[in-house]
Length: 185
Image (cartoon, rainbow, N blue to C red; front, side):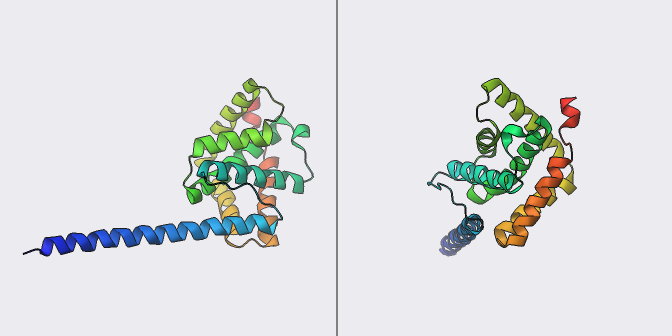
């Protein structure tokens, strides 16, 4: 007589267990991100709010990659800045999924943290618009977009020196690709 009730309870238990497994997987991925940053001697203020965590993670990552390349954002060409911004957006796309954050806010604020210091709001807005357009274009070019994300994911899953070197190498390729040259012309 109450078989429907038991089936409903079983269904709810299945949903709860599925949700728990997803959360456990999510927490494991978040721990992997923390370990990856610790592997390069970097930590960031994590806080508890997902957007804040992701902004700080992407800012920290790109500053480390820029420093590893011996670069300073103040001395980079506009093309190099745009390529750096696109690279940060692609990495941001992956990390916001791990922390369940909001892509647009994280990407724009991290971009301004990395490239916008000392710049006026007009320059920051213009650069964010250009980077967004390049990112959208790149997202449809499966090869480049997926390669960046795969290298970033590989480093998070296995934060070895070699995987970080591979991530830095793909950044160099993106930076040297003149990805923003057509838009700036």
